Amino acid sequence: MKDHADISVVMADMGARARAAASILACVSGDAKERALLAAAEAVRARRAEVLAANEQDLAYGREKALTPAMMDRLKLDEGRLQGIADGLRAIAAQPDPVGRVLAEWDQPTGLHIRRVRTPLGVVGVIYESRPNVTADAGALCLKAGNAVILRGGSESFHSSRALHGCLLEGLRAAGLPADAIQLVPTRDRAAVSQMLSMTDAIDVIVPRGGKGLVGLVQREARVPVFAHLEGIVHIYIDKAADPRKTLDVVLNAKTRRTGICGAAECLLIHADIAQTLGAEVIAMLVEAGVRVHADKDLAHIPGTSPATPQDWGREYLDMDIAARVVPDLDAAIAHIRTYGSCHTDAIMTEDDPAAATFFSRLDSAILMRNVSTQFADGGEFGMGAEIGIATGKMHARGPVGAEQLTSFKYLVEGAGITRA
Image 1: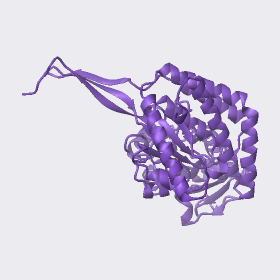
Image 2: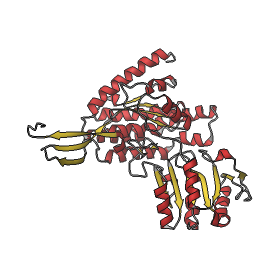
Image 3: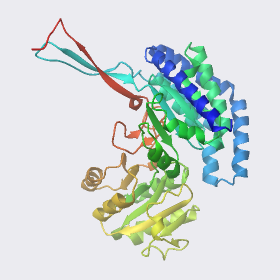
Image 4: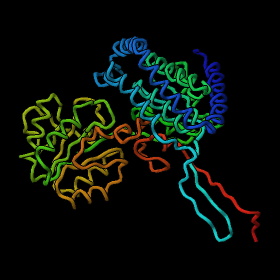
């Protein structure tokens, strides 16, 4: 499917079929959606050998492209991660159906009875890069919210995404739901992305999930509304009132548990009063763990560090690297985050309640944390089962985008033959 005219025809057909499926899903019972997701979870378990074989094809492709170890980690599936995908499908299935939920209800003096109720968005387009689990997460969340979805996975995860999509289709068939509810773009050609961004008659919202290049492209070129998931330039500020044990545990986990996810810590800000004590201990711990610490002049004397450059501030490494800077106080830490952050996730390590309250009130990141590893910036850890991404904009959805965030609302107004004067 190399001819762009052919891709245009295919995408238009997918859009029309998704729109038709969305009209059916809007009226589907919560029980049917639950059955579909549970059957999909069972299919992931039953077809795990097939999925892992497909993933091995993608890993070979990634090695040929010389992907970084962090990117290969994002791409890799194993028994544990497949179990996590199946568990996520079951968790989404078990959630209350958001569609039709009454958000507010009131009566007007005129006799009007008004209800504001949740309703599906319609058709969601999801464009993502190397993480194959997004296929299952996005498909499941859109279905739970009563939306049809068109998935365009990254070229690196092409085979894995197809295998997981097959599991989702098996779930739809088991519940008697239209297969067109969850469609996967059948080509690696980037022309399909351009087509999706202009399908205003078929797609109601685009959700990009990937690096700065992908999200920037989508925001520049999309004619369809976008839920922006920007890069995770995640900061941890170590306050002078930080607990040493908590700080050492949290910082190590936030940086090294998985470096290739958007919640991984990318910059440490250390209060000047503890820079040469707890701060130096934290830096030494990271160096010993194999992290390349890009340190400012006040920390550069610590063995194993390398000098930070201006390009290290506001950088998403997605690897075993972290920038580190000494700041004179909380105000300076907040100013740094406002200048270099991406409004994704930022954390403070402190036992000082007023300092934490100031950090929470003066920063406007989608997720703010205190004494918690930033690796918890994840819809599954928030009780959503999974997420499509972390929305960093301010319109409609912010933070982890789960099923509830993939709905809108409408007003239902009733009366007894009321006329307006």
